Image 1 (spheres, rainbow, N blue to C red):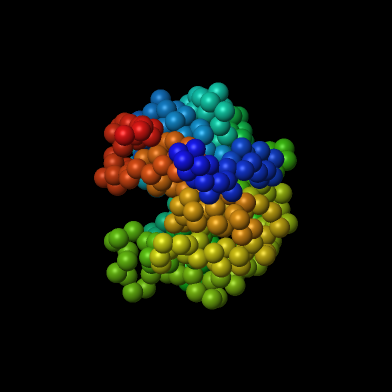
Image 2 (image 1 turned 90 degrees about the vertical axis):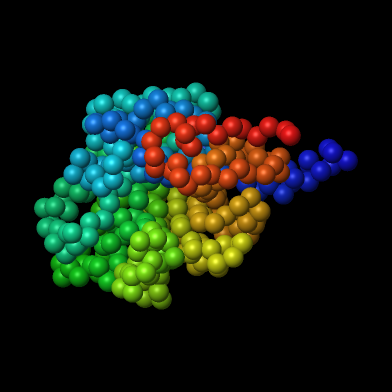
Length: 349
């Protein structure tokens, strides 16, 4: 009876446990760890520490770890205690992280990002500014390869700078970087992929971003500019089709804010038709809904964010049907080991 119950639980999780290839990234399962900013680089040089190595090493059972967004240059810094990938000390420190993850059988890519800046709208960035930005992404991509990462992911989601160029409410430029705003991202994709052999670069997009995804302080704004309306989605339709022509490993798609227990699978179906490559679905998934979207053929893998915070053994919990532990939001960005590397693996009552 007990064996039958265990077999049933394993079968229900089986879609997530199948191996898959995302470009040249060969994954033993389809459970992806989403990039999570945790603000643990509490040093002047924004260098990853032993805590980072322990944190990612604990989660090496993921089919793929997408490590937290790292600053592509010193000029890109937008939050405290977030690591970078622009100095030799950072490269050496990240190499310790990737070495441990690989020793434990894992695969890890690094997200590259540049935050948005309300004080300097995209229309005020000069073409030389954009040339420097593109070069920074290219250099960061090469640094990530030297640091031992298996690939990189370009952050063009949320309210980050690249997402602002795709936003018709914020991009008022009249030059070649104006709407539809694809040019900057595509040029960055080209220089980032040039640093790698084969398909080892992903792009993260959030066409459905809305005020429901915003920080609490912004949710009361009547003029909140990030809204996935029909015109916005149409612009992303064209962008996703263009990305399909680049040598990408995958598209990492953040879906709409969940309005119920099951994410809107139709939102992912829209872009599945447009992108001729592997797709990672994200936002509000659990084991059952993650299995469902893979079974439906609408995604090749599913990424989980907060579930990985308190469940370093998430893949095993999914496989065995064990409950998942809850995280403590009060420890997300506080620094130190508490709420970061002190979550136990599942143990029987």
